Length: 163
Length: 163
Length: 163
Image (cartoon, rainbow over all chains, first blue to last red; front, top):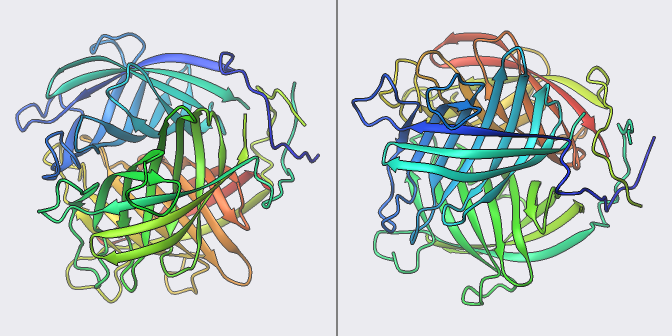
């Protein structure tokens, strides 16, 4: 079976699967090891005043609602770094790992987190297990940024290729 | 609607969208903060003499022609690092961010930049906005590498999945 | 030609291309520069006792069998880091580079390496050259982890989109 498929039609409003998740990042500050879920691997550079270059590796809990203490339905493992000289702005690459009776598998995501925008879209570039070969869009919205050590993102995952 | 599509035909010479862009990287050297667009986050390791492990985070201007001072049509945000012991060779992962009347959206790219080759192909792994769900190839060509602190890449972006 | 293809059928057991490769990582320890193929770019953080945050950049040989000294059929260039507080667990993003009479081109891969699992699936997110636009799954199995400075992974590459 063979097609030439240069231009396909997909309705952005009609994903084949969609779910909203919350991502909780508690940055290690030297004294919160019991609660911390991420830590700084490389300190910010001296370019500007917005943490440019600060690189954080995380293994963060993912919940269905926006309560930090809700039972995690997945983990998010990966990294982000800040990349702008003149504003806070980040870049993410990570894997959502599901290992429950409901879902087993992973979703791989990468893209820019333009923190100044109300929402921003990253790419779902692949998946495994229950999410075999999926693609789509992950829309970030900052739910809260409490201080330097806790922030929470709403991740609206819309999959447009489901196998 | 359901298909089994193991083998598809795509003509590498017939992308559904194509544009050539120029990427300008001005590395922070401690005294050029006003102009610098990138900075070293981790210094090179002691493995070989070709900057192995040197990791750079950038927010670089993208122009339509190869003039650094032309009005940027996009930003490139992400990182690269050098990865070889015996030659200069890099690896990139980044997002092209378009925010103009002409284009709004992002294109996510990753792959090896085998600097010894005249041209090298990286993967366009996803997109958002005007580039919703796109995939393709980004072909790099070094336009100039002026000194340790400025280089310019021609990026020939060929998209083969357009929605 | 235009389709709306939300849900497609792919048989996970029937890739359009499949090959098993071995990845050899010899970490630079300060005195093995002649043999080393990777080096630590950022040291582990103080979060837990499992190398959290340790970031390694590699240019590793890829062989068809599990002998380190077999002739390489490809290189793997990219990085991995450890990301857990309570166990060894890694995250990879890299490019397989083929440059032989048999294959020319690259395959781009990213995902979580849950080292505690017997096998784990990462995403093949793109390809170039002979692997133009490919997608699929890379299944990791640890073949050996000899000491702190050598480990070998079996990578079972299954491609489901071949052009």
